[in-house]
Length: 325
Image 1 (cartoon, rainbow, N blue to C red):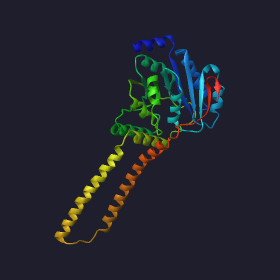
Image 2 (cartoon, rainbow, N blue to C red):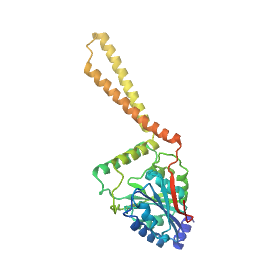
Image 3 (cartoon, rainbow, N blue to C red):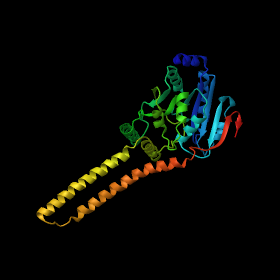
Image 4 (cartoon, rainbow, N blue to C red):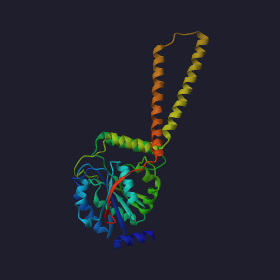
């Protein structure tokens, strides 16, 4: 029954599509991208909105957006500064009004011609349709191996299923959107949240295109920070592991102490080994600092959450009810 209703909505071009696109310093591509996006959406439905979240761009991105024709049906959320892509996507999800939302980037790496495939699967009854890159050949070996390691670690230490090579390029049904909007944590890892909410989902492989212009702002440092956020917000295994390591070290120390006392009673006192003492102290000191650092990561997340600061601040809204604020 649900499938019939959705198929009919696609045939009638009555499904209301919200296309959420975060942008940051994309002045070189926005005109061409949104022209192509508008053309594609116009062939799929008579009801759509293009919701653009400007994540604190410092170039002429907003100026280029304001020059786009009014029939593009664009809405702009201008954030007061760069809050990061995770929070920009959150802002888009909280302000979209469509039956479905399609999340994608404006640099042409997410192919627009995959959108009809997303909608076809949605009509079949899937609540979430996500794109998975079929190759990472255009990335450096360091980045490929880092991604492979991250997905392996997440699979081992969390109880959520995060698909390999799946990003933010996806379609979300209104039920999924409403569920994500209930999650108010400040340290957001969207790939984990997509998996956590569940619902019926399906993957669509796609070929990642080269960036039409500019350079990615996602360097190894930002990817590492995002990976730490994902691990610490979805798993407490690191804390438990270091508790286990502490127990093992204590047990080994106890056994060594018993051995040392026994040998001393039988053979008498031996000269203390200064090098071995230094090695033991440095080893235990390193273990303690490492465990404190892991504990600090979790405390930092708690600190961020308890402050209850908003996830983003809006400087201006354009195109909402045909007004600018």
